[in-house]
View 1 (cartoon, one colour):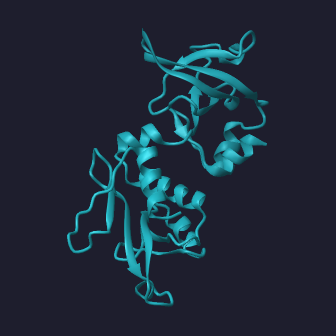
View 2 (tube, rainbow, N blue to C red):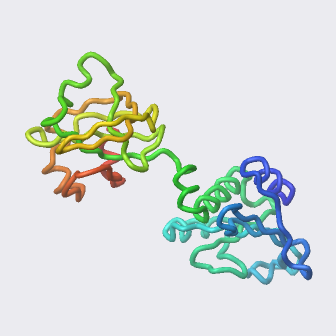
View 3 (cartoon, one colour):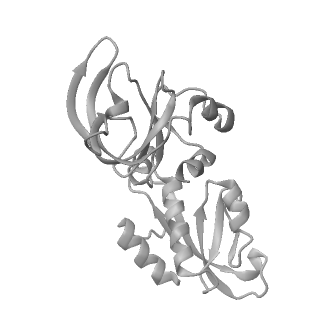
Length: 247
């Protein structure tokens, strides 16, 4: 992937054009978010020996931010990916644009950098689908039999849950276990309900995808094996539990 390929990819996917803030280095281009003005990419021409490589010829590189330090430590072991030149090496990498790194990989890293530097509002909007555990209290709703005659039901909208996410319904006592996996089909459905125990302002529509036996993921297993000590509201799922739920 060359310089023009970078320009085309970022313009087409993110509608962002390059900026050239340095008169002395007029080939160096910055790409930034429109809302928070943070950089998500810096394209520049650098001498190879300045990056610890052999040779003094210039090569195009793109600096990108990687928030996951474990992933960063792994990826800089790959050919063509180096600790960032002229930027914080704990959070940024430099990717050679000389054909060493496949185009698909460069695009993937640009996407990661865009997400890592986005505002909280934009990050939530563009984030990939996520998995959640959400509580269901049989005292107020017959969740045990909710999917007897249909595989689609309306449910209280969970904060930050969006279309495409997966929700695992944890049924409270006396069941005290995860019983269902559902996919979120629609969110933000207006609804008003209020009682002494429950207030609902919006609903989401969810589709049943999988059932679990009550003894497969009971509360004791969630606590002892996956570190989940309470399910009082929507919460994310540890990777280990996510893998077990998919089996």
